[in-house]
Length: 201
Image (tube, rainbow, N blue to C red; front, side, top):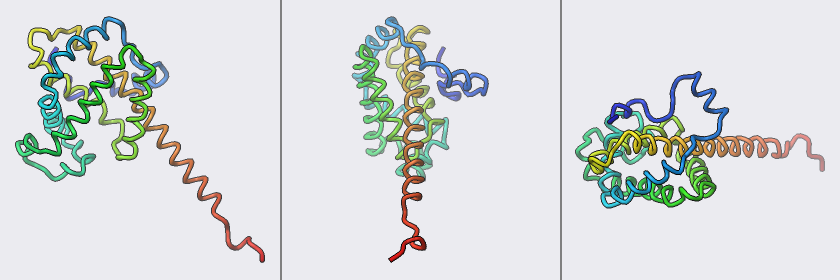
C-alpha cells in the first residue's frame, strides 16, 4: 500500500499484459468499489484545490517528461514556484472537476464512458498521448492518502485504481478514435483535391 505505485502508473506496462488488456473490456467497477469511492469522495472534495496542486507537482516531480505536454509549465524548473502557480491551480481544479463528474456518474457507467471518451478525444487535440494517463491516477492516490488518514485501506486503494484504469482505458480509446478520424480526414481531403492536370476546359 502507499505511494510506491506512483512511479509505475496504474496501467500495466508489460507487453504481454498490454496485449491481453487491449482485447478485454475496461476494468470492472463493482458496487463495492462504487460505494467506497463515493464515501471517500465526500472527504476528498473538501480539499479539492489542494489535491489538484499536490497531484500535479508530484506528477512533474516523479515524471518530469510530462511537463512537455503542458505548454505553460514546460520550462518551469522550480517545483516550489509551481505550488503557487495560478495556472497550475486552475488546471488541477479542471482535473478534479472531471474526477468529481466521474464519481457522480458511477451509477450510470454509460454516461461515464461518454465523458471519458470525449476527454480522450480532447487529449488528442492537446497532443497529450495515452502513456501519461495512468500517472495522474497514481499521483491522485498519493495526494489523497494523507487527507483520508485512517479511512485509507487497501480495499479503497484498489477501488480508486480500478476507477482510474476504467477511465484511462476509455480515454485511450477516445484518443485513438480521434487520431484515426483525423488521419482519415487528411487522406480524404488529399484524394478529393482536384488534380489540375486532369481538368479540361
